[in-house]
Image (cartoon, rainbow, N blue to C red; front, side):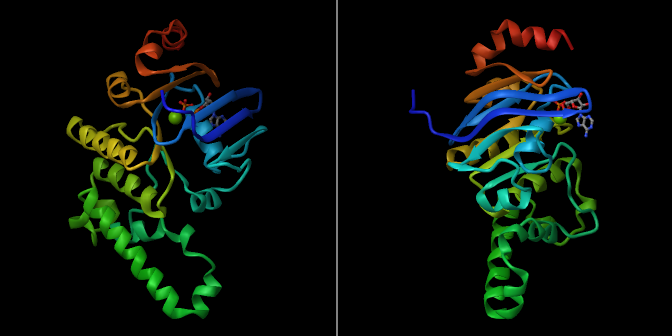
Length: 254
Ligand code: ADP
Ligand code: MG
């Protein structure tokens, strides 16, 4: 067993909506360079946990650190610059922009001060070129290069999922949180997305994703975390979690 090297550490995180405690996580560590699946029935708090950790929602309580730095309450664009990005359950592609512009927009967190850019056009131009090069690399990787100048609104549901993942990679992240990247996608594309996720892990990225299909979870995960009613009810290697009575209860109880 490799020495623990958590890239994300969460303590005592609570997020409630009125009287409903959506997330109540005592402790969670995600190990660097692994694929961790977050499972659990609908309403378990998975998306809310992602929202808070990625800076799209606030917590009522808790502390968390990313890559050795305390980042509690830090906003999404700052986290992205630090290397933590996420995708959404419903993709956030902008239909009336081209695929390439969607990619470029995802890099803005990295672009730095606008004013500085305006004052230093040559630097800005170089950044602009770097951003476009990165975008083209990723579009090719995800086989979207032929759609480069099409409006994103013309993409299929599956291509949108690919674009969503490609966008997340624009900032050269250390860790990606993927919320149901395979939901509603046909089996062939699911295989392709799984291939991409494995490749990213093999390149050293840390991937944490929400997934419902247990075959997918079993096949790809280094570690599985199961939530129910806001809490972590089990975690461990895939087989152990699948057989854990608390996990079976969580699904039967829903
Ligand atoms: P999951 O992603 O595991 O299906 P969610 O994190 O989306 O679960 O939701 C957890 C619980 O929090 C659910 O009961 C949901 O209805 C509630 N919830 C999520 N977001 C909000 C919100 N913005 N306002 C009120 N309740 C919410
Ligand atoms: Mg969800």
